[in-house]
Amino acid sequence: MTKDKITGTLVFTVFTAALGSFQFGYDIGVINAPQQIIISHYRHVLGVPLDDRKAINNYAINNTDELPTTPYPMSPTPTPQVGEEIMASAGLITMLWSLSVSSFAIGGMIASFFGGFFGDTFGRIKAMLLANILSLVGALLMGFSKLGPSHILIIAGRAISGLYCGLISGLVPMYIGEIAPTTLRGALGTIHQLAIVTGIVLSQIAGLDFILGSGDLWHFLLGLSAVPAILQSLLLFFCPESPRYLYIKLDEEVKAKKSLQRLRGYDDVTKDIIEMRKEMEEASSEQKVSIIQLFTNSNYRQPILVSLMLHMAQQFSGINGIFYYSTSIFQTAGINQPVYATIGVGVVNTVFTAVSVFLVEKAGRRSLFLIGMSGMFVCAIFMSVGLVLLNKFTWMSYVSMIAIFLFVSFFEIGPGPIPWFMVAEFFNQGPRPAALAIAAFTNWTCNFIIALCFQYIADFCGPYVFFLFAGVVLAFTLFAFFKVPETKGKSFEEIAAEFRKKSGSARRPKAAVEMEFLGATETA
Image 1 (cartoon, rainbow, N blue to C red):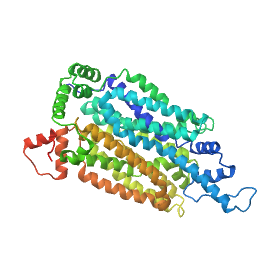
Image 2: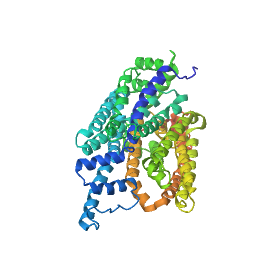
Image 3: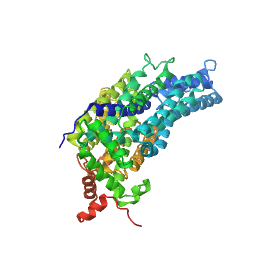
């Protein structure tokens, strides 16, 4: 038996695919740093009066407070009409800014359904090439937004970039999972998340006011995602197509062998071919699995529900509340330069994602997920305690800050990267594209809900907001403990058996088990 090894071709191919994930992360983080400058530009383009600026800026900087009613310089006592104008102008700018942020998630929600379809129709490589067209269009719209109606161009560019990222969120994990040797599947699967958080932190650094986050250069900052899109498009021409796609979807064994030989670094790829042949036989015994069938067929129902819960746990844990609003949280905690603390969070985020690459094949997926969620639960409690007692004990600001850093660390050890590739491990070739599509859609939808609702929840709950998230994390931790199987080093058949054990199914004869694994379609 030939030992799996990391070859130059495998490294090159995974790096090229991960450039798409890097763009995903860059697009998530890039909009936050120049927020005030972009809002100021919107105000200029729309002709919002000078005195509304103070109201809007103060409201945007610390929007947990009520909107200031600073009077006009020539009017010591503001009239009701002036107050209404200020509120109306601030409301318009706030709405446009919210659309600038959330249109990205809307695009992602729509496109996430089509990642599997594009991958199966055009192949993994061509699908990523086509997706890059969307990335380039979105980057160009944002890059030239200063020359036209900036609010329209940015909102449109963000939406189109979201379409790209929605496709990539399905295509990249699928492609990496299919080219990775079994023993490296988990470690390489975390590369998707590592590239995302690297993109986030680099966008935060590039967005500093003395780099590209200035009034003169912010549009270049937004358009910079065109660079990795162009680079990836060029490098993809030198990447081998997914052997599983070539063999199982196109039935081209010769091409699949050549692709495997390039990726594995040796000629004897019989073991991989046999494994794919078995998978193809299983897939051919199944009808094409639709998203509806994932929920109506009892063979798939348990795995898909667990898959969706993993993605919901990732998003509803409160992590995006920290990513989106970390600067204001650090301000509340009394940090003088909150932007640098936010970048610090991004660096910690990246470091611990890299750590998970090495841990995931040793500790196992389920173990890391449970450790991460348990740690996040404790950190969320301390975070809220620190914010609640901040007025009584100034040193509590350090408690909150340390809790934030540890919260992010625990997230990236398990709940961050694991749901993305664990879903692919739950399903064989037949239902996998549909499962990845609905899982990605769920992730994007939850992301959008949190982005839209977090500030309202924070305004309502105040410093107690992370107590709420602690309760949510605890609920998902208990669910994972009882329902999520370990997939480390296991075949699809062994994973299916784990699901039956978790669901408490009675033991059945081996033949019946084999028929279920082969995906025999239930009759009505």
